[in-house]
Length: 156
Image (cartoon, rainbow, N blue to C red; front, side, top):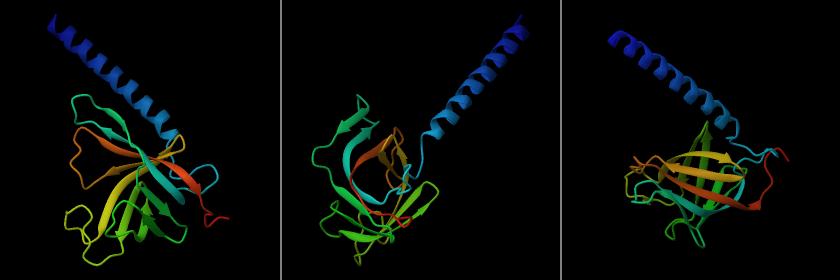
């Protein structure tokens, strides 16, 4: 009898794995580093929501008058996030956004990164999502931005 239960558990486990992996492929189709027009992150983005997974009631929290990032096609950016340093350069590699703040000695998150910050990013449903690598977000934290200004990309 125990062998039958073990076999049934194993089959159920395989079934759950198959269902789980088939759902991931569909989700990935909607995630892209670029919009249909090819502009990607080029433009001005304003923070609109923050996902807080570590609170008693996890979920999206609206942000009023959120800070902005403006990403230019030449690899430079400006931001209203920090008054001490509002500019720098950026690099994209797969789904990693690297920000290099252009102010000597500026450590934006007090993590001794020498003005360098890495974030996981994706664009989905016309919103730009950033997940900090520098923060301990075991329960999940994501910053969601909306495009407020379109800029010309290198392709135009």
